[in-house]
Image 1 (tube, rainbow, N blue to C red):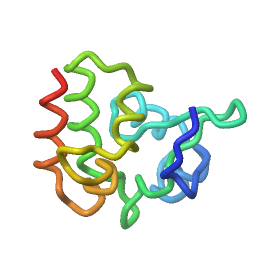
Image 2: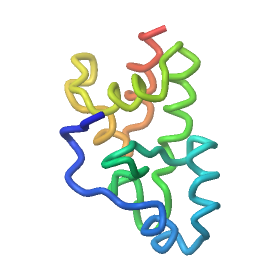
Image 3: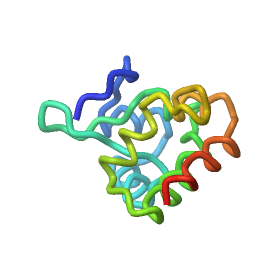
Length: 112
């Protein structure tokens, strides 16, 4: 999967270093939808902007769960986060980074 909006990627080990946790803890955070990863060159990579001020982007977990509850796969959910959304007038992931969680989740709810 190629995500055009991502200009910087981190390996699991790099995320672990930034968060001050083990690589296995990062994998657990991915399993729990606190973070997500995409395979690039056969290696799981995390978009760098999901780490904000040394912490995972807080709003991603609930948004991913909402997308899954609406029947989207991991890949479809991640693609939705990175595509321009007409209802938002913006790209959902960048609205989450700006702290605009409620409008993103309202747009996600219309998918179900």
